[in-house]
Length: 135
Image (cartoon, rainbow, N blue to C red; front, side, top):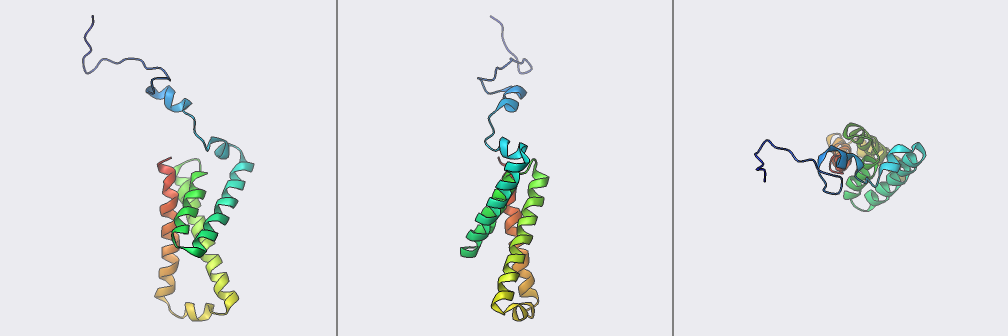
């Protein structure tokens, strides 16, 4: 019977859940979305639409939209870029709705308060996109 010290290593199989091979062979549910460009764009567009609809009801929709577009990214850096892109899209949609209603000039005249709304939209969408670092 051999005694294992702190430096001894035991090979693990994929069933045991250890080692680099098990992490590489682990099932990732969004792998097809990240691999196929058609699925990737479909996920981005649908995630953006869902996020914008939810953001029209509650500001946490910006976090959900950022998370949805960020989860399709290949790595964390691209997820953050996707979150910034979704935030810019949300700001453009907000400005478009203000223009359509005829209140864009009054909102832009507020100065820092209008910039605060833009910063919040960008910040919440990037916060949501950081979900890619977890999954």
